[in-house]
Image 1 (spheres, rainbow, N blue to C red):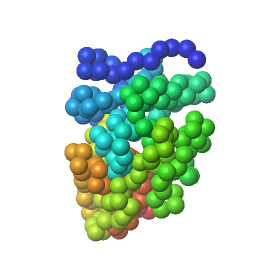
Image 2: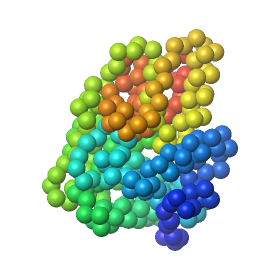
Image 3: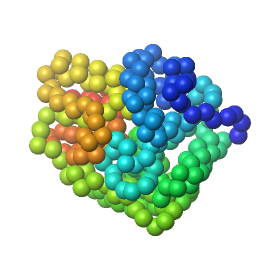
Length: 249
């Protein structure tokens, strides 16, 4: 494994790329929104750490109390995303990024680290097998599939917020809860809105623009959640093609 890691800070955020959307012009607007959101989070202890290369190799985490997810607990770090893609896979970068996060948690005197995963691999959620190998254990489960995994240093455990266990809403139309943490959301919302308008599909959008809203989500939420006919469909970000496949239209 070669290369060095850097952290995105208020001093370098305008110059550095956010590698999850690197080199993709259709996500440029989303990157701008993401950077503005991050500027407001960095002083809260939010961390975006990546390899200093032109690639998708990064980890993003925050103090759980300030993490925009329906998970609660005391003195934990929450990992939003850990991603190693393309030719960088299999070279130890994921383990190195996780080790850095663990070291940071110890340095801060945290009780542990947690992350949302699933028993069966799902898009946009970290792989349970990898997490288990580095010591994470399942501490809470919703629908016998979505799992909150934690690496506890002192025996304490975080948990899903009670509202997240509903996994149902009253609205019957296609309903999407989305946050500004992911740079893909702007283009996804544009494609979905255009398709629904063109095909007269009722659509209800909820922009999660506060920590309080994120903590009280009615289902699993990492930065995106989809409901249809009142039922939870998943956390996969959707473009037009994924939407058509999901709805069968």
